[in-house]
Length: 115
Length: 237
Figure 1 (tube, each protein chain N blue to C red):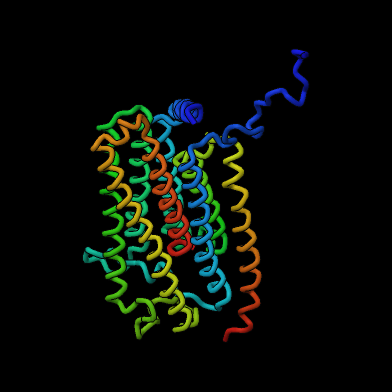
Figure 2: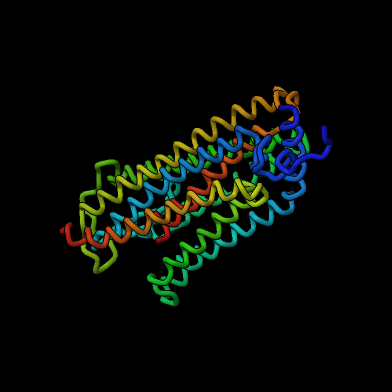
């Protein structure tokens, strides 16, 4: 047990090196920047007709996934964990993609059932 | 007896050869990760249900027409995304203060941890206050669980068929999902307050580690993460 705690303490030391104040604010500006881009698209580019709504939606989703990556990787610190933990958390998320594919496909058939 | 060690008796030192956690993360922290994973499934099920119902409808109320006021001010029309933008900024900001608190915890700086946690709690309350204002505004318009306004024309884009059924589904999903998220924010604030009290009482100082702040931080960032998706799917798409 004692060896585990010393190991944990050692690991904390590593974390301190990997996430400095400067990096934290860097990630903050990235998140704010991505949100600002989403706002520019929603409030200016789409109403002006520069980007059609059909193209804007996938852009929003990609930008959201970028934000999710930065929150999980840096704020939640997953990027600096052991590779085993990264896979233990990320791989099950693939099930969510499966559910998205199944239900979006299914929902196109529901249209005919609803009137 | 031979002193030579046979290959089978050699002590293996790879992460997965036993004797220690291959994740080299404290037990409570890995359990927090798995809890958040299960919570991610819950939230994605709700959001996927929203997507499926939306995809299977031929018309859907427009977010920029429903959310175009700034509750708490006199701005009633023509300001889509302004208020929710403020809410998003508050939540991202509180995530930053949380991670700065975790960083201070690594240095064992008790006062700094307390300061950042207080700011995080304030951010959480500000977000909840904004959500309360927004909900109250929607209630005053006639939206609610099982309730929609009588006149729906103003909530649909020109040319889109006005549908009471789809508006009702939108309202139910909106209040369920933002309510579930708001409940998470609320519990997050409560846990942050408990942690703050423990920090001030010196519990973690005595323990020699601010790992608890880190675990609660994980939860708080997850709440922020969920909001990023709620924001996209309810207000942008």
